[in-house]
Image (cartoon, rainbow, N blue to C red; front, side, top):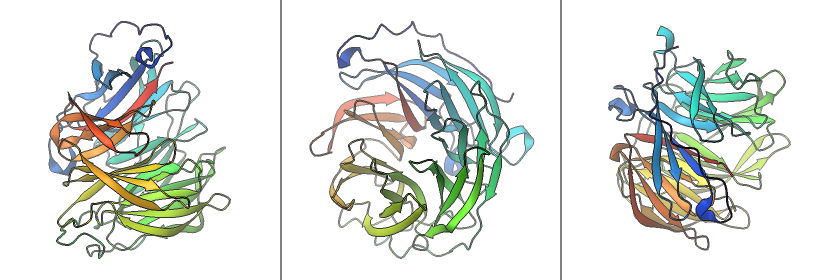
Length: 400
């Protein structure tokens, strides 16, 4: 076992659930960059996975414990039962091989405390994203540096087994900057070879989609939930404009629309999604930045609000969160933006009540908290800064 598990004293058990949001027990798990070899050549300042208690009355985060993990647990995902958490450990030195790893943790539902179960190879270097299939039987992982995606089976006890399938992204790399980037942009990276950046099953669980930044493609796989295997769909992928760099995507709650965020062109593409055959049809392209922006920006995260009325996108270097309203056909309209009050928002998350928005400011070593206006979708800063070294991702556990 290559991870050193060091725990701070476990806080007392959460109080019994009572009526009212103020007594609602919500925990937040935050992944960080924790290795001297952090992202983009920088040093990670985190210590592993942080566990916070979130106060639903005001959004405040209170640290409960830290699960030490020195291998960059940069992306986290909960299983459907919310009894296990999985971390993508963004490294390339697991067991001496050119691979990263994925760790499985058991969650104590009475306290939120986590116990490491096991760690397995991610089957590629630098895993940047993972998700859990809706069946609860598989973890899907995208290896950015390795250009591979893998399927890891979840054993009955929640630990992970060896991969049931591994696929190498194949295709032509476009070595030219995006023609749709903002004026004066120098955003160009990752187009040296394939870079798998995100992987997630569609809402039906029958197909698995994976974006590759280096190839400017979103791959579509048929998924065999019995065997844990991927088979190329027909067509096997959808292409984005050269140099744009598709990074993350998000499905609308109605499962008919999907939004892809391009890292280097700073654009959002709205797709119509046909669930019966797993096909994507592009219908709209819109900038993720405010009108008139000039210069370099790298986008990071995209999310659809739980009611499906708004889409949020994070812009790094510009350090803003753009807000879009969703029209009757899924088309986006720019509403406005909010400054993150931090440096380089790696990702963001919205709590289970839908009232608070959290920006993980990687280079600012802090999480900043905002209130969400349910009518307009706009964000307003609460004044709360939560100190944490190089935060990368955040997931919530509602213990009610």
